[in-house]
Image 1 (cartoon, rainbow, N blue to C red):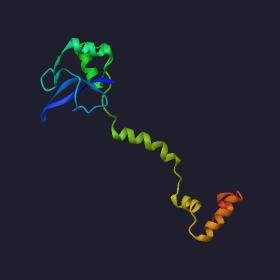
Image 2: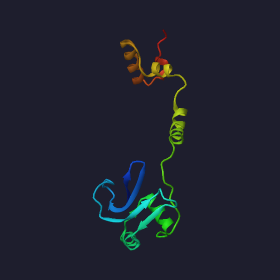
Image 3: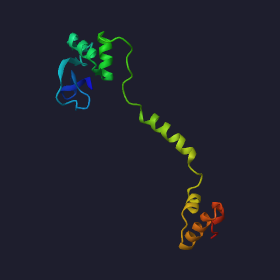
Image 4: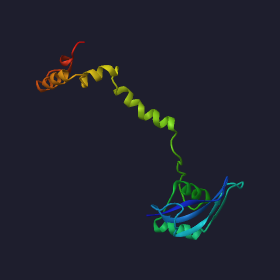
Length: 145
C-alpha cells in the first residue's frame, strides 16, 4: 500500500522535512516513488511547498497520508475534513489503565497462595495429589506447622 509521509532532512536541531510517496512497509529513509514537496516548521508561519497536482493524483490513486501529513494537507486546503489526533498517549495514563484491573484480581496475601498452590515437602506433595484426586477443597490439604 502506498503512503504519503515525511522524511526528516536538515541539520541537527534544525530539521526540515520532505513529502514522499513510498511503500508503507519501507523505511522512511528508503527509496521513494516520488518527491512531492517540502515542509519547514522553523519559519514563522511554517512553510509548506507542495506539487498540488501530484498530491491530488496520488490521493485519487489511493495513497494514504500519514496522520501528520493529513493534518498538513488539511491546513494547506488539499484535503477536506478535520485534523487527526497525532501522538502517543502518556505513559502514566496508559499504565494506570492497564494496572487497575490487575490490582483487583490479586489476592490479599501472597504467602497464603504459595502455601495453597505449592507444598514444601515431598509428603505434602503426595497429600496434595491425593486431595485433588478425591476432589477435596484446597483448605483441607493444608498442613499445620
